[in-house]
Image: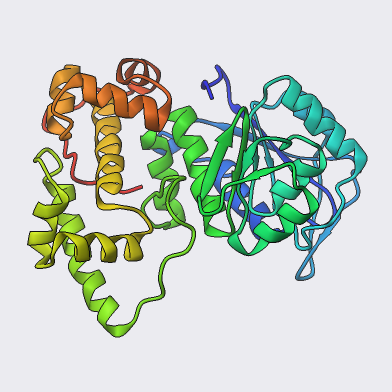
Length: 336
């Protein structure tokens, strides 16, 4: 998404059956004014076909403040998950989503919100994800959807879908990061006290720890901390495994069981995040940014930016560079 000139207009699609948790997440990310901390302004509207209050599970209710016509003005549309995944969305909602998709407005669905997009026919022959426990149900009722088994969130065309609960937070922060830069997403994440950001390709399910696995996890956490504070240095699975006192094979297996991703994939993600910070905060030349973040060359950094962010480092800086800082910016502090 390209940042708009004014406040980013976000539409929260409302209808009976949506999950209170997802509504709260959407409101926490885009409905809180954090402009005093450098976050761009957002204009979040609760758009519905009917102005009547919408009952939510747990004795709560949600009062719409806009009609579905707001979707035509929105820069981003977010669809919450459902308490019952087979809840039919009102026909006007489905029609409004189809029109928005035809306009190429980004649409993001949290958890079971993928079922709503599938009802609208938007996921036909497209990749999508939902909570791992709902995959079979989605396949049964919408066999035309190409389901990704294990990802936290996926992007196909202008459509985003995410897995359950916490993965919805991951997707929301990713959308902020894509449109407004890593610094804005980090500020929101810190205020929400979330864990460090996870990429969409990370596994949904992480092996449940045993006492031995807990000890291994502590060791791996120390290795990750070392890698983050020495991100410019060359690292391999073998070198990280040696620091953990494990064989490379054992290290890689335990690392994936603990984090849901491979050591090298994790390291590349952290290097991209470190480079984003330097591009936003400093005027360092691109080759120096690449050197300080462990990519070695501007070409390698550009390749990974294209893969992870679908943008070049130069264009990223042009879009998100905000305040020049000293050349000594710490790239090791990779909070979300």
